[in-house]
Length: 68
Image: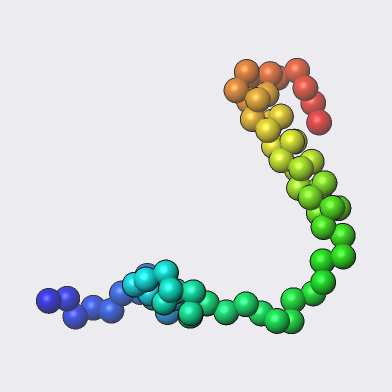
């Protein structure tokens, strides 16, 4: 028997054995701000992803001639 407490355990997690029990314990905040421009956020996230993918391709093909 182990008498040491588990320091890795997060007490804010929801413990449930079924999907219905988990759904019953979850809450959604009612005071979320209105998302007025979701298209701008989507466009910005696409650009960030595109730049990340380009850098991965450059690293994969070992391209050293591009400077930023």
